[in-house]
Length: 136
Ligand code: 5GP
Ligand code: ZN
Image 1 (tube, rainbow, N blue to C red):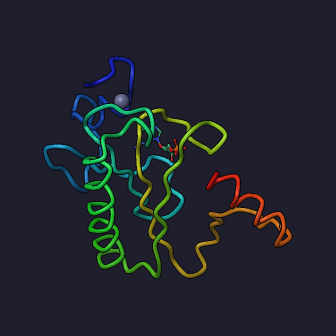
Image 2: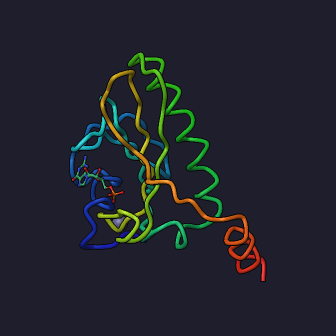
């Protein structure tokens, strides 16, 4: 299903023009309008899902394979030195457009970008407690 007021539904389904680098029956990949680095691409399913939890398993499985293929092409064609694949779910996690998407970001030596987090320093007891909580 498409969602009427969703900009990524409109872009994915070709109702709004985009710089498309990949398209098939289920997905479109476009250049991000605010790229972290040259070639920063967004892979969008044509069917609306707010986030990864709403995405059908079959679509999720296909998405990673396609992201891998696009990533390879970006690295080869643009001469990148590395690649980040990033996927945000929920405002607190940095999601700003509530239509599932995967960021495929070519990285270049000296691109001065930072994609990451501040590492915590949990004790081994704290890690064990988290592990128990998850597995309970
Ligand atoms: P998020 O923060 O939700 O994971 O990522 C949203 C991304 O979509 C951002 O990197 C932003 O630059 C990009 N974006 C938002 N609106 C548009 C748009 O209309 N066109 C394109 N090409 N990119 C968009
Ligand atoms: Zn949508």
